[in-house]
Length: 243
Image (cartoon, rainbow, N blue to C red; front, side):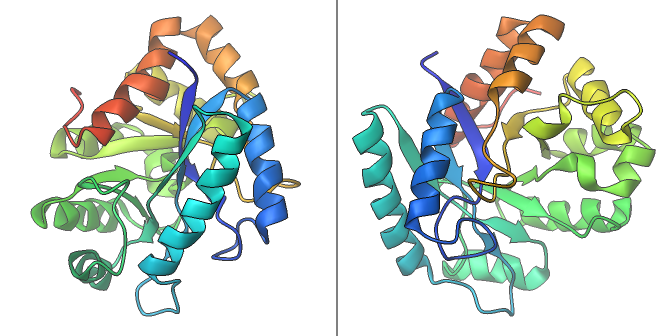
């Protein structure tokens, strides 16, 4: 394993509430590289019905960011996707090519309102599956219904949903319900991807190293390899991950 994947990052400049400009993007790249990250999936927000940056423009910007990444290190890469706010219109946008899967695969990173009901989340992700996509639930620790009833996560996984959590909630106090929730999922092998969900070089920065070291100590090297290399590589091959 020659580094780690960050599956959720708002590193593209000037496209959403992430990096403001290319200078901040460069700083984010430097931080991420120092943290051991070697492949970033850029996931700018997409909300159907709002003014979204065109796919053609995102491809151009990602290409420019990739050139900077590869100038820092030959093995450093940035892939392109979207963080998709769920709606039926979002699925239509995917079909038209106005919204992006992850790196051209069938995998889609999908988010909901934090107070969405389990039924809303399940039905939305089911619709993604029925449309032929492979859904990853973004930052699962944010949804009140899941944190309150973690057993619901198992139902989503059995339905064909993959789970992403943020590095930030791997390290934290025992009394933080999101931290407890994430470790419950990790202990039950119910996490498939990790992401920084970084939005800048000064706040919500792409930190991962401390959380990775903690994972190695509390769980195992093999757990880290599975989450931060094997599963992302399976995604890039457009194959299902064994649950």
